[in-house]
Length: 380
Image 1 (cartoon, rainbow, N blue to C red):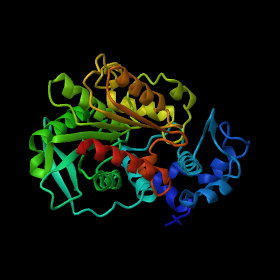
Image 2: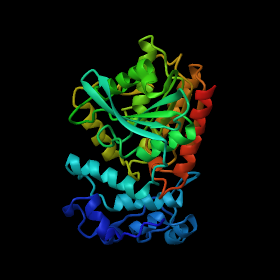
Image 3: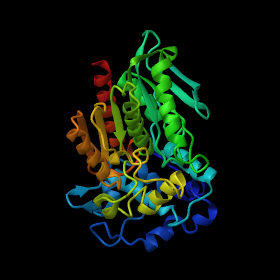
Image 4: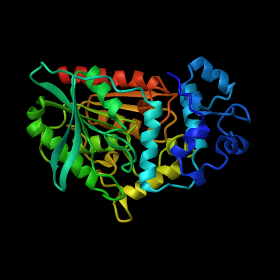
């Protein structure tokens, strides 16, 4: 189904009024197209995010974004250019508005969640109080199902049970596993290590009490995207350090793994779609504050000195994502430590594409690939 809303209608939802002056007209007048084949990019509207690939190529009219051998997926390019067009560089709206922007974007650009026999909101005990969570059960007749603790993305600042509802439901359905989405505390109200503490507490609880939900506590994976990929990697490392059972496997989707931001992809894609460098730096500042140690493995899992004994891992990256190279580096570090790793780069994709499956169909392809990995690993 195509999105028919004009950008003039949607822009005030995505941004505060003072940040919308001129909308896409202003964007199309000022855009310096340094990453495309030609000098003047096409005019974009929100309805273009729901076009077929052939229609998207026609709208782009040859203005394809390239980096070396990588060519951006035309659907991803239209989404990314639209996101950039309705943002004002250097401006970050108040937190409630910022968080609503992500909810709105996912509502518009992600496919609806599939129906499941059971979806249930629960609360899990944590060190600082109860942690909201949501259970996605693909079966009602099976006694026990393997489980996945899922940690959402959003820069540790945005994201909640609603923004990742569709993704978690799809993973449960196609991965044949009970998925438990964890609504960990967000920054800046709750700075590091609050999110880590919640994620680790939720994993330990699922291991100890998952049978109450219908989970086989001997088969528990962790998974997450972006900041949630960071938390998944941290949970696996903390479990190993504490002498606890490590997850059966872990899936890290375009994970944030090194707070130094010092990789070729960070330099090459500083003006990236969705998460340009200024945005990543801002997210990190909200999460860490001024006194955090950025080489602490709980912040930068890539900096861990010991990775032997980590669980089998799948890492997904996007070719036009500043986080790309740290994901690849972590895959290589795990392999050197003897860990079984599946590394998958989607070379034409942008950050967050797995959560935008209506606008970027390859997000669904990736979701199904992740689900199949989980299904095989958890049934072994």
